Length: 77
Image (cartoon, rainbow, N blue to C red):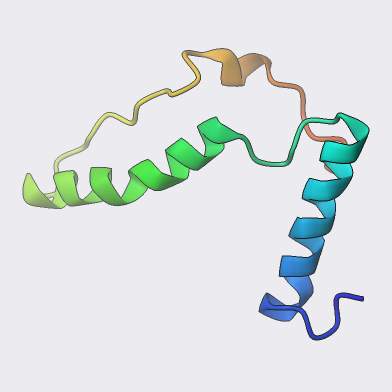
């Protein structure tokens, strides 16, 4: 089913996982906090470059809740 889907089939897998999680009432693989963190990288990088590569604090959009988020059931370590 993933054959012919975009990005070597990954678009299909991501869509499949999202729909499966929504149907089953499970947490999605990415949440709004993940999206905010990914989006902040560009702005924070530009800020660092503009300050001659000075370190820039990365905001914790979850207010520390990331430390208590259970791992996704698809990841087994």
